[in-house]
Length: 114
Image (cartoon, rainbow, N blue to C red; front, top):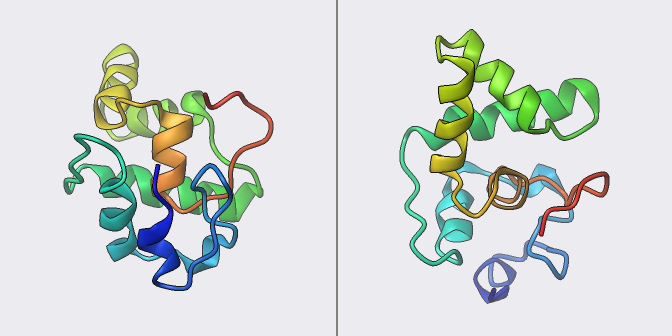
């Protein structure tokens, strides 16, 4: 994965592509980050999840895992099983790797994201 796109904007990232400083994130950056993922197309449906990730982190000081995000979707009216499928449809390379990275979070250290 190329780091050049965001380096040109002066945004520091770790070797795995996660932002070093989540406060550097903005909505336009999502499109640039997504362009580094083959076949990734950001749609309006991504932003409620990305914003949830950021808000959850701000409140709890941890990155929400799949269970937390699935609960969020259930509160929005999704069936639990369908919510999880939907989450992985939005982030086909994995929620913890792709979703958390697009949300501008640091690389989670408590989970395997490979």
